[in-house]
Image (cartoon, rainbow, N blue to C red; front, side):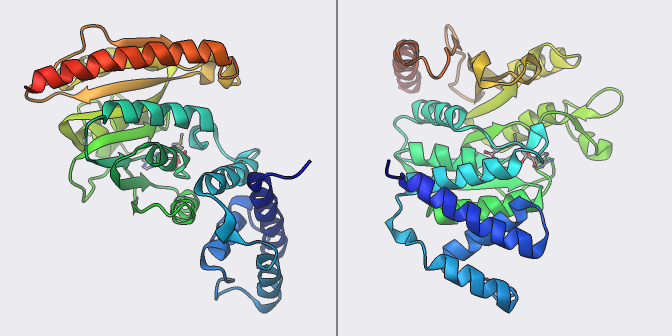
Length: 334
Ligand code: SAM
């Protein structure tokens, strides 16, 4: 069987990364950034020693990158990152899976219907897989921003966006610190789950814990709302236990005060290794003048992504729900 372009690109990236990794004796993901840099500039990085540079130049001759479609590039990169993350990356730093990213993209499209331009921010951008997938789903002109604290992941993210010819402004920083950024129309984030170690910084948030470390995922929600326009939307990939944990009462009342819960989409069990890791998608609208809660929020339990007919039914239900929701928004604005 003939190989697909995605396979060809992945195999080339994997082979080149292994050559670099063997030479540099560093983690796969670090070598992968060098591979991606080489592919982007169509040249070996200047700082590389002669022996390795020669090998990388030879590898470059084996691939004509200009023949790959953006979608193929995105998927090829995804596979290489997945390989690099397989054994070494902590659960809360993992790349957002393709199916989940596509679903967030679908929801992003629905809540931005009718807008000519969209400003978009992912404060936990990781590899930028979620962000670039969402951008590729939106038909409008998108102005994109991303925040990420991890140096390797942000390098991967920048190169990922460059190779997909997407313009994104990256902030390499702790996203719970202030940003030099105006509020945006839409925030998307696959939230990092766990404790936030900086208690002093946490003090600036309403959602700080009364005692001990605060939950990073709670502070991220508050921070994301700080950088969203009134009436703008936020789509989060959240742990299923978000509304059941110890500090969840406080989170719930904070959300009621500052936002409207537009919907919760439960992701299928089959997409996660264990019950503990199960995730949902939470859609919020930041409260503002003229905004209101939907009569009935969108509450959906996704079937297995492999079950095409059940997926078709659910998508139809969601389309109907959004048609009603969006016409209500139009009426509100009249
Ligand atoms: N959507 C990303 C993707 O497609 O690769 C994955 C996001 S991952 C679940 C959560 C990310 O949040 C990780 O990349 C982690 O490094 C980042 N993170 C955790 N705490 C952070 C902080 N305080 N500031 C900025 N980024 C942070």
